[in-house]
Image 1: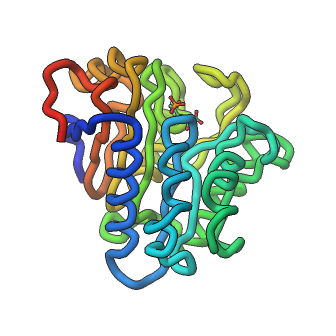
Image 2: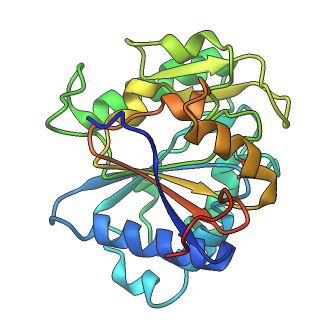
Length: 248
Ligand code: 6PG
């Protein structure tokens, strides 16, 4: 399990970020020949990556029948709402590639409320995993994509939220978001997000430079608390990177 200070890989710009992320994801997906799960991030930063994966050479290189797609968090809004993370990823990627519908595990945002959605999604994750307890030696995910909010949140784990200390549940409902869009959320908890061979943070733009610096300095922000059974990789573009960081 890695809890050390984040190691940064700095790339030139948002396009280079999407390409570097796509190459890492493809490498992870093609390790092994069995069924695997990828956990997608929401927000705007991964949009370029999702669009790229739907194009060649990536589209032909992904074994779509073997890959199952889950989400680290979503806004509790209908799938066709422009704020829906699942809606975005389907529009830019999953509806444009031969991904079997049964392999797409979006959070159920048309149920009573975010708490019920979280309960149902946890049941689905446990059913997919095939056990009640997460085994450090058998991570749930091959890769978990993560973002960084300007307030230091990641997934929908916001500063000061009780969910930051959750150790049992895999999924939680969040009634109050700390940042736009101010709608209820459903989020995986740190233990569930940590059950991965690779946790890949994507950070882009000058708007993230300050908060990234705070994460790197060890400030007690949700994104700085994230950990993984496998590697934690921070892929950031030059605009977001603190000054004087070498560009890969
Ligand atoms: C969400 C996300 C969230 C996101 C960050 C960064 O649903 O909002 O999952 O955690 O990753 O807010 O968002 P941007 O990429 O849009 O800056």
